[in-house]
Length: 412
Image (cartoon, rainbow, N blue to C red; front, top):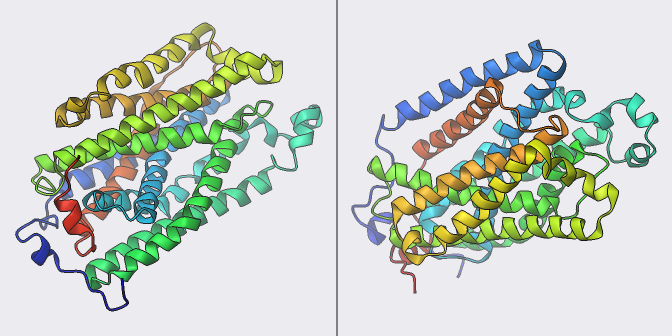
């Protein structure tokens, strides 16, 4: 690939293919998502800052559940884009732009939506209370890492890394739409290599900071991997749902074919199994060692009111979708794939409840109106902003040098 290589135009590769949203189209659902999300977010913030005691703590935890669930869509999209670039994959070119639109919401919007968590740090994390730390030898030993100042510094680093990578890949991809410069693909592949390393470090650390430190006496080296696996799985599920919805609106039906759905189904299945493997490995090792400082975390989650949620996750997050998505026929059947995707999206939200809430509600899952408004608020704004990106840019990378390969992709 030389510096003078110019990719063909979309008219040369696929004449007659619709690559842009028609003027005024999709504006109603986009504005509706933003309006609904904003209203729900206002209601959630009111519940967070006007309530007291246990209700206030529950409100902040509910917001954290919604935030970590929604953040996973942006992070999973960023990972997908970098993996496709570093492997120089051809099949995924027509799929990639939507993930670019998703990951673009990471900065500044997900950084802004992190502010309520920063303001509620004392409601969420016991290690932020000096009197508690002073009486706890273990927390005192961890205070060099678990302290509010360093917590906020790390959060800034995470968003700078995620925002910088997301901005670079989307802007470079859009620039290629304009210039057709094929060397930009090589440039993105080169940046993806260190980008994936930074991604791995920051996502692992963020999962530890924002979720695992809710139980500061407990630790697991696999915790970041579990959140990562669930994030990529949920992103694949959301892509399947979004593409099916866009197809009903008259978009992407010509370019995202049964073959692409088949590969998305494979990735959905693979990361569902990866989540189950890492989750089971964490549980099995802690069960086998039977050390009090490790088993405490599972003690709250496998007994009493949380036991049904534990069983539901084992069945709904693994056994049922494993049996469903293993079939080649299901992965090549759009409706069946959407059903599996919706199930796993719901299970990922339940998993966030399972990870975050037992520290507050030891005796079982407690759902109130603020759980719903928090999810609608954060997710609604995320999807509305992502849809705005979809409307403002070509639906596919119009001059990617591998576009023809993607359009004619066929599973062997």
